[in-house]
Length: 93
Image (cartoon, rainbow, N blue to C red; front, side, top):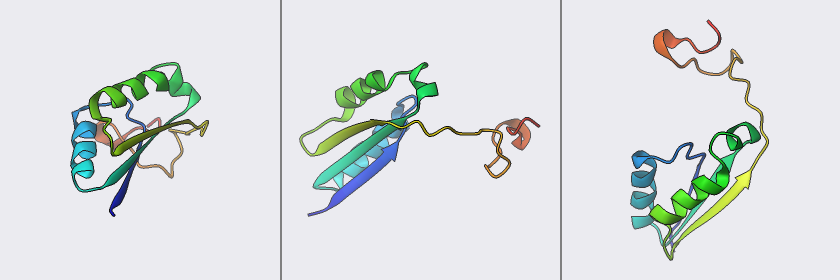
């Protein structure tokens, strides 16, 4: 038996996520999708909405969706994180 797992925020859920999950599901007997989020994101796109998107679009008899609200604050200005954005900025530079 092949068991797979995908962990992500799906913030927001998009076609790339859908492709990732459906391709993984095709290669597994059981696929577990763990969606996480934090309280800051909850105010923008609540986990319940993202969970509904996942369930509507990818849930199947061998795809199991688990949702966890994790208050793991992210310091987007931490210089140890990779720089994103135009010109590699993103750390307030």
